[in-house]
Amino acid sequence: FEPTFGEGVTSGYDHVVLVGKGASSAQRMTPIEEQMLDDHWEFDEIYEGSRLASAVTLTKEMDGMTVYVPDRLVDDCP
Image (tube, rainbow, N blue to C red; front, top):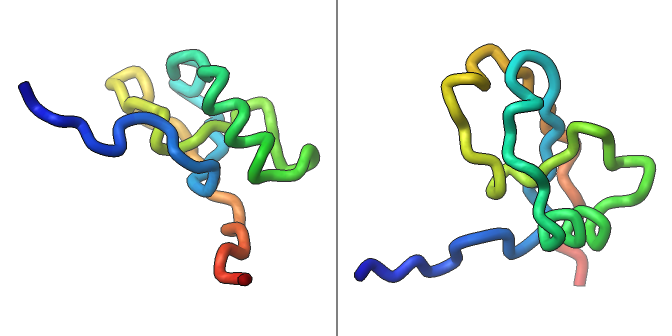
């Protein structure tokens, strides 16, 4: 038995946009991942290929895929 502390989506700060070759081979977005995107990003900042980086498992089919990393959220405000 190996503990898996922090496994799974825990925040929406790691937003990326997957496009191009292999983007469609990513696993389906889970309801938790979708909720995290909605909670942390505005409607006009979420695109068809929007995902959370921590929820995407890379595969050989994704070789050559383009990953856009949007500007980060301001998370240092009190």
